[in-house]
Each structure stands twice: as structure tokens, then as C-alpha cells.
Image (cartoon, rainbow, N blue to C red; front, side):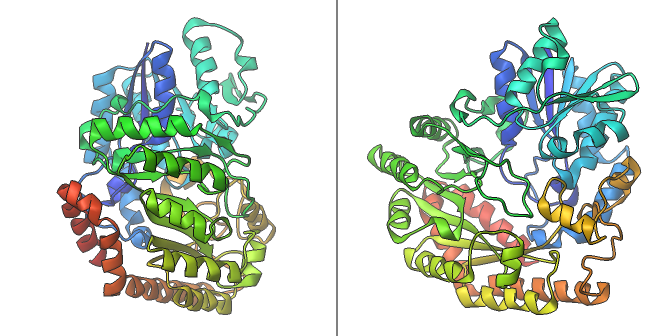
Length: 493
């Protein structure tokens, strides 16, 4: 049977660059291919010529996104329509993240318009936490997958096409039966990541459009053992075997010429010994690659950083979040400012370029707390500093706290998703970010803080450090140097 998996458009509509290929649905596609189905993965957000890179400015472009949802003649939506017509799928699967779930709804509507009898199944983070709401408000979607999708989609497709098994026994599936929304037992998180296949990147309809760096996205573990109140990541941790990761690196490097990889684990260095084993094998096999990862300030030390650098690590991203101990505790972040200070010193000594991620506008935060964050950023001196305004995400403890404070509502209607800027999703009043800081004061404050961060990042020393971190990659792949220079120019604008 023919199955089309779609990553709906969002950043592309706004003119922003969306990095990497869609890993999650490509793994799903690989599972389905191994079952014998004809599968294509259509990344409708693949965009090779962005006009902007500074993601802190995304909200200013949201009116264009909302306008596109109403415009059937928009070139991106026309492309989506043509792709669905061309492929003539028997089943459509759509991936949904909360910030652009409206695009998923729009994609489902287009699919049904073309093929009224086709069935649509939704997966991804939004479906995991809002599956019942989704089916209730969007009649174009017939099924939703809550939680890990690989086993659920396998059982669903066996039932859907071959009538094997019973739909009631497919854990993690939510579906519509007549006028009722039925929810099966949850899918238990699997710690055995090895049973899932390596993503088959050849399934991508836009395979030739991605850069070698975009194809270098690799997941070595799944889930996170921490419980930050703003995060909806799967709790628990499942690892892939190190040899399997090495095999994928070699395959991607040989096929796409990739020399810059990204390990996309939520917290890459939770298991220090495993990271060292991976690094030692990269070194021993002389893979000669560069790579980046995400981690936490309490999960690094001098020995680990030295080993990672020797193995090719040239970028590390860490969540600092706040310069206020009070706010860190309210986030249940599990770190202190002193730990961030010590980590920053180690990172700055290591020679590895690092990015600090910060947040403002969270529950209970005062103006003074926000200025503490700005001051702390300048104290610890990350090579790149990024700040975002907190957006309430369903399924998180901070979301539930927002409901108690009267700032956040539990559900949204389809009309609200299609007419509300994504940064205002679930807010009781879009004008009110905080119950402590007035709307006008907060709006002025966020502009001030974002400008401060932007100016910090434009420091010539920081710009040089970022470029120098990829100099080995630039020598091997001059095309990436030109791409990065173009992105920098667009960021400066």
C-alpha cells in the first residue's frame, strides 16, 4: 500500500530556515517500508533559500503564517496539494508539533478535499498530549498516535490494511467511532532504542535539496530523566548501542559526504562512560568528523570535554534558562547558578564553541529576575546566547501552573488554532504573559532583552569563534562556508 508521511510547512512560510530532515517521521517511514509498504516522506517545510535566521523575530512574522492558512492559492499550500495528488496515497500520516499544529490541520483538510475517503493519522508531540482534543475539533483527522509511534503505527497499519488484530488493542491509539472519541491504553515508553531502524533518508521526496549537514542528524538516545516544568519530553531514557551509532555515521558520511553531524539527544552526556566509548570509537576508526550535541551544565567535566573535543565535538548547546536561583527552582531545573558558572568556565577553556539558551516570561518571574538573567548571561559569556519568551505547552507542569494562575486555558478550538499566533496558544488573554508584570511593561522589556542578546551575539569575537569552530568542515565542504555566510548576513539583517 502507498503511504505518504508529511511534515507540514511552517518556517518555510515565514521565510525562515528549518534545519535538518524530519527525523521522527523518517524513522516511522522506515518501519513501514520494512513492512513492505511503498512509503514517501514529504517534508513540506524544506526550504533552501531563507530570508531570515534570527528566530527571536519569528512572532513578528506570524500574521503572514495566519494569512497563509486562509489562502488556498498560497504557493506552499499549492505544492502540498500537488504532492498529494501526484502520490495518490492510501493513507496519509502527518507529524504535528504544537507551534504549527494549525499547518497539520490545514494539510489534513487539503488531503480530504483531494481524496474524501482517505484516512488521516496524526502523530508527534502535539498528538501525544492533545490527541483527544485534536480528533474532537478536527474532523479531517481520523486517528492519532499518543506517545512513541513506531510500534503503534506498525500495529495500526496491520489492522488498517490487513485487518490483523483488534483496533481496541493497539496501545497509544486514539480514534473516532461514530460520535465518540475512543482512547486505548497508553503505549509504555520503551528503553530499547535498538529495536528501531536507522532512518532511511532515501524516503525523503526532497532528498537532493538537503545539505550534507542537514542529513547529519542522528539520535543516539531517546527521552530525558529530568523533570523541568517547562518541558514535555518523554520521561525515561532509552539508548542505542554505540556500534549502531558508528555504523549510521559511516553510512551518512559515505552517501552524503557529511562531515558536520548533530547528535539530537535531549541530554547527550547523561551517561558519561557511554559518551567516552562513542568518542573513543570515532577516534579509533579515524572518522574525521565534527559534531554538536545538547547537554546540561551538571553533566560535563574537564575530562569529558577533552575527550569530546578530540573526537570532533565543535558545538555544545546547554540550557542555562535563568539568572535567578528562585526561577531555576520553580522550573525544577535541577541546577544552580554556581554549576552554570563552573560549566561556563570549563566550556570556555575547552575551545568548544557553546551556546547558552535562556528563557523569560515564565510563571512567577519578576522584572528583577529577567534583568538577573541578562546580567548572568554577560557574566558567564557563552559564545552564542539565545533567549526565548516562554510559551505554554500542554503536558508540562508549568502549563498546569499557568492554569492555576488564570493565565492558561486547558483547550482550544479549531478556529482559535487557525487565527491565533502560535506564541499565544492556550493563553487566556494573548496580551497577558504574566500575572506579575503588566502587558506594556513586559512587551517593552522583551524587546530590550532581545536587543541586548542580539548585540551580544554580534560581537566580532563571538562571530569569529563560531566560524573558526567549523573551519575544518569549511575546508572539506566549501559549499557549507557559503551557506553559513549567507545565513549570517540574513541574521544580521
